[in-house]
Length: 437
Image (cartoon, rainbow, N blue to C red):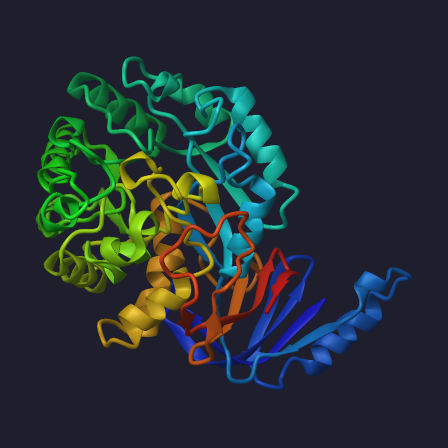
């Protein structure tokens, strides 16, 4: 049994914002009440359920000075398991998630083997049960992520897939994309889309223009994203499917999503912390640690992403947590893999770049990281409610943490060494303390 006292409860699902106590038993929030009002109830319930198990005691957390929010939800992580566990595995990825305040994550399917078959899904989901947090998995849109043949999407849903994506690769065939949208609609699932048309790209990972030229490269132009977003909005409107535009990077794409959502609320978008924090100038300073797909763009793009997050055009923040080994990232820029880790620094960057910078309030930030992704993908998470799961993050908004080391196997991030606000004090999943800062 767990009693959380004196915390500022912030629940974007209901708009609750006040100082309250929470009583948790058997993984469920039993009662929420005014500060100090649950002590007797907690002790009475505990005394009625005494056992010889030392783990059955009453644990109290004094959350004075802290925000108590729903456990964070990230619908876009790469745990590299199976197939690339030298970079990360499901256990270490989950440890990184806990340290970042996340209690729910959805793994992407560019594993080896891919998540285009029930055996891989079974492996991932069973291993996820060992982590102490809620680990979900996508199903691939096409077999082998080759863009040529649809997977058996219904079978993947029956085996636990919560969304569909070939993340890392766009679905280039309009015919296959249209069929996938129709099938996803029938199954009540969302297709999450990596939007970079390779015909525009000479080298990936860096924005075409000055940043690429300094590396002697041509890079990836904004048109690669713009063209795919336009195409897939049209297909979504035609088929009635729900889609998410992943890790949006250009102001033009933000504008297209904003316009599309005026008539079609089933078109969604996500943004990463690195895209609302950095520009392509970071490549000069951080080299391969600032290499990602889609690449960091210009200041006007960064500001457009922030505006989209603030006004609800972009409904969710997702880390695109992408671990790589030190040796891989030390390669020459054009030969190094794209991507950075992000689970542990996500909340801190959101507070610093969005809340403390005056672009949105804390409740809006938390909504983008909890209830919004949970609603889009129909996940049982993202809210604080009596009778609901006790998935919580407790953090101090203005207390900082320096990110010199990470729970992830990897440390490929341009934010290494930075001191960020929003120190995580506790992460609690299904009523169990899974991380203590």
